[in-house]
Length: 226
Image 1 (tube, one colour):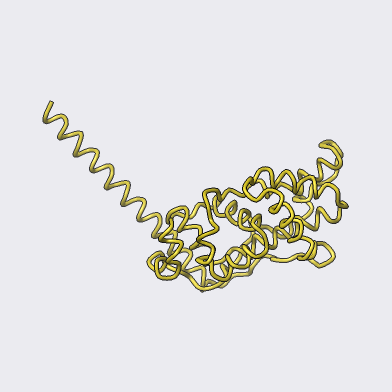
Image 2 (image 1 turned 30 degrees about the vertical axis):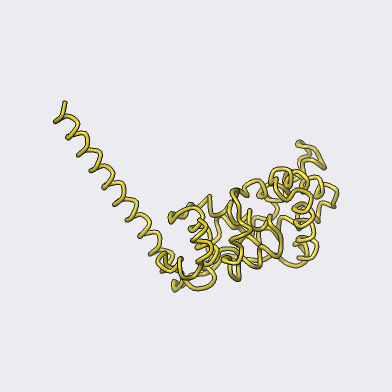
């Protein structure tokens, strides 16, 4: 029995070391790709819509701010309020909201925002998780959004336990269906605005690359808290 436990212990240790090595290599390769992205040359995908398509910033942030003020601590309730609020607008305004939302999320493809995410969620950057995180940033309003792009360390006191923003991805579609019914035959806002894509577009990441070793010095309050 004694030797059996020793063997089990050796196997478990080996598996743990192997896992740590694979995880380290994976993260290291991922970081190298983001480091190279800062200097790679490629043709970027469109980032913006014509003014005639998108909603102006003032109205967009007013809608986000109104929903956040109504439900400051309940993301699902905030999204439900926003859906009903959007459903009261014209078709063009709902589509415009979706277009502006896409622009805002793409603008958050930024090295400081990447660092913000990695401090909260560990060093591995999940593709889907980072998309949802950027939608969550937008859901917090204009001031939070701009501070994230300027210096997310200043948001340490405001950031709490929930960072899931996936439902904001579909509020314009949900508002369209609420207004017209699910079988209207109308193209949904996300399908009307495919020329700009946060999911499949190729974009240079904004700002300068920030290594994992720099996080503590660059964002001391966030690192201390999380």
